[in-house]
Image (cartoon, rainbow, N blue to C red; front, side):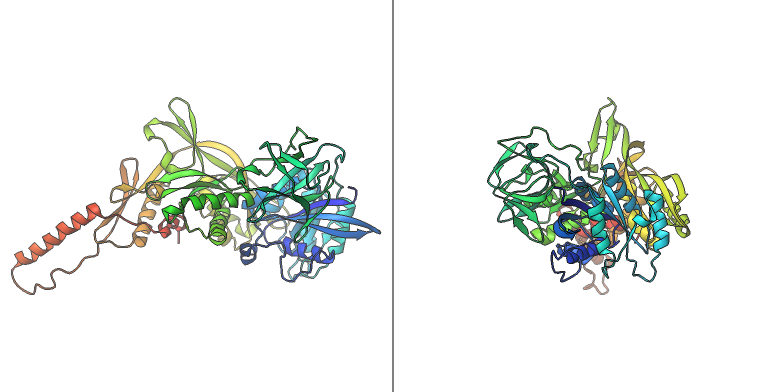
Amino acid sequence: MNHIRNFCIIAHIDHGKSTLADRLLEYTHTIKVTEGQMLDDMDLERERGITIKSHAIQMEYEYGGEKFVLNLIDTPGHVDFSYEVSRSIAACEGALLVVDATQGVQAQTISNLYMAIDNDLEIIPVINKIDMPNAMPDEVADEIIDLLGCKREEIILASGKTGEGVEDILNAVVERIPHPKGDENAPLQALIFDSVFNSYRGIIAYFKIVNGVMRPGEKVRFINTKKEYMAEESGVLKMDMIPKKELRTGDVGYIVSGIKNAVEVKVGDTITTVNNASDKPIEGFEEVKPMVFAGVYPIETEDYENLRTSLEKLQLNDASLSFQHESSAALGFGFRCGFLGLLHMEIVQERLDREFNMNVITTVPNVSYMVYDKHGNAQEVHNPSSMPDPTLIEHVEEPYIHATVITTATYIGPIMTLCLSKRGELIKQEFIAGNRVEIQFLMPLGEIVIDFYDKLKSISRGYASFDYHSAGFRPSKLVKLDILLNGESVDALSTLTHVDNAVTLGRRMCERLKDLLPRQQFDIAIQAAIGGKIIARETVKQVRKDVLAKCYGGDVSRKRKLLEKQKAGKKRMKQIGNVQVPQKAFLAVLKLDE
């Protein structure tokens, strides 16, 4: 146990942590690095250049004539995947805090750092990309010293590209990070921090042993779900899974026990043995709270069961995804899914398409609201269409967030304007180092889920970083905005919005839908309504055949007769005709400003 070190890499998105992980694997001769970001094994991760999943891998390193086992967990950097980071931190004793020498400390760096400090992790600060021509190692070192209160000589200068400083990092991991603490003779307690689905072997759980020893062939119990299985195989994670005769306290590994049902493996659960069982689960693991909700519906109705199975398998690999059944008059049967943010939603949609070949329609994303009725009863509403009647509502509360934006002084003005236009309240503003500013706002979550992040990046030319955490619910004047097509409400397009924005939003949605809906052989009236009051209207004109083409000259009554006949036919068509809403229309609401 004294020769084991468990550590993770935390950083803001695009600060080079996956490239640095490649160099560590190369230096310890764990694998031959044939292409960049070896741990990012999903096509989607490679294409976008982001880490979506945490990846665990074991390295062996010789230091001072002794062999050490280093378990590395590479984590995502985007704010939407902070849940993955929290799970990795729970399985480690130390963390490498990687900061880009060209960009300095960013919002997500601070957020992940506080998470690691709360878990009592030993922090090793690393300044990466020092080989870049515009690197500012001294200024960035000052920022890290302000943040951590460490000494300048404790900060390691490195480059993931050239491999500079990699040996220093490995030495620091051995010297500074404490070995795992635990009792090998105690009953087995292993914390599950991830799981994957394998179509041949069932569900494979990844864990870290806190106490005791695990051996294949023993009967194991999952404490929270109270299910028992035979441990068919267990071992350590390198690029492939390597079976071992036994795993001891402090080891990070995997277990295969032929589990077929996705519900039976919960990330954060504790594994113990049946013969010498521990009755206490490992504490300190948080349940994930979804921030953004959207309806996911199969394009073909008969694919409903396939979609359920696909979501269950995806949930195994992504524990932060939650879903429940829902139905819509416009789209049929589907699921209400909870996501951590818009990028997370986009990634899930993309993975459903690539990994499970599921074509889905996603409705307009929204957040959950607390609705209080006249009797004082509270109800959590995730879907605007399930809002109670307005006459029964006493008041509605919406979720607020504590947002932190870090930027250079040049962009303070436009960022302030953006945040205030999204109903934000300024809490504080302070200079960190040089001309970098940290601005804190209290904002409604509903205002940022759609296009806030994109706008922030464009007005700051990419120089602003953004992070947020929940700040509870606050009362707000919210109204339900319905979209009607020919008098019929389309529940999938309804949205909850602040009373001040309702009229503008209604007009913009009607204008956008007018451009997107295909023309029919009858007029389509597009209306935006709040309750029974219509606040905006647009009309998609019908496609008409020129019935007067054959009338050249002649009496006007002949022309009128033909037009009246056409009019009666159009009226009959309107009664039986229905309007098909394309997928683009559901996404149009997201991009109203374009």
